[in-house]
Length: 402
Image 1 (cartoon, one colour):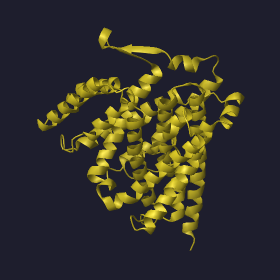
Image 2 (cartoon, helix red, strand yellow):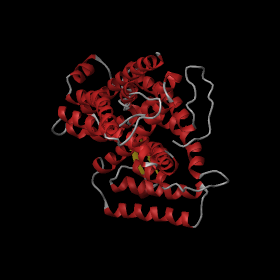
Image 3 (cartoon, one colour):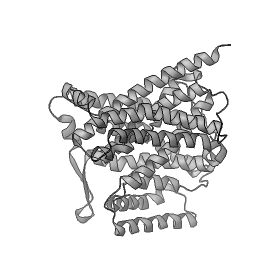
Image 4 (cartoon, helix red, strand yellow):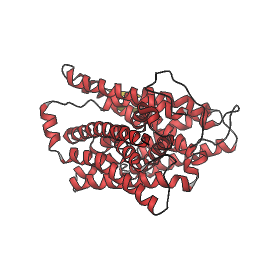
C-alpha cells in the first residue's frame, strides 16, 4: 500500500487515524453511514403515514424536452450520485494498480485470492437457498464488502489491530469492489443499446484525446463525463459503471506539482463518504421492521440466503482461500498477522452494506423480495460487525500473552 499524507482527525483515543487519507476518511465515513442508516430506519418505522416512501418516490426531471431525464429521487441517488462514489472507487483501484499493493503480483496475490473466495462461496450459499428465479436473481447481493463500515470497526479497535491486517483488509475490499463492479456490469445490465454504447465509446475517445493533448484541468472533463454518464444510462449498462471507468482513466500525471489522482481524490472523496453514501443509506435503508415484516423475513429464503452468504460465506470463503494460498505458497500473511486475526477480518468482510443494498435494488427493484433482502443485509452486517470485532479483540489479547 502506497504511503500518503497522514491526516490527524481529533476524535479522541477511540478513533485514531489509520495512516493515510483514504482510510481515515473511510473510517469517519462509516460513522456518518451508521447515523444515516439509523435515521432511515427511525424515519420509516416511526413517522406517520408513508412519508418515507412518498418522498423517495417523488419524481424529478432534469433537462428540457427531448433532452430531459425523469427519475424518482431514489433513482437519482442510486443512478446519479452513486456514480460519484464509484468514481472514487475507480480512482483508488487505479492508485493501487499504479503505486499500491496491486502493482506487485506477489503482494496482491493473498488479498486477491481471499477476495475471490469471499465472493464465490457467498454467492454459492445464496443460490443454495434460492436455486431458481426470481429469488436467484439476488445471488450478487452477498459478494460485496463495505469498506467504510469494515475500516470503521478496525479504527475503533485501534492499536489492538496490526497495521498489516488493516492493509490486508483494505486491499481485499478494493479487489472485492473490482469483482462487484464486474458483477454489476455483466449480470445486472440488460436491454443493451448498440447506438448508445457506441456513443459511450466515442465519448471515451474524447477523454483519450484530451489526455494526449495534455489537458489536465479537471473542469475540462466535466462535460464529457456528463455525456458519458447519459450514454451509459441509456445504453442499458448500469450508469454507475461510467464512474468506475472515469476513475480508471484518471491520468497518472501531475498537475500543479500534485498527482492528478491525489488531487481528485482529496476533492471528491470526502463528499462521497460524508454526503453521497450516507444519502444513499438514507434513501435505501428505510425498511419497515414491524412484526409481519420480520416474521416474513425470518422464513424468507432470500433473507436466509443473504445472511448465510455474508456471515458464513465471507468468513469461510476468505479464511479458506487464505489458508490454501499460504500452504501452496501463493502468498504469505503480512508481518505480525496471525491466522485467527484473518478470521476476524474475514468476519468484518461480511459487512456488505452499501454495495449489497445497491445490488439488491438492481436484483429485485421493489416489493417483498427487496424488503426481505434489505432485512437480511442489515442483520448480516450487524452480526458480522459484532462477531468480527469480538474475534479481533480476543485474538489481540492472545497475541499479547507471553
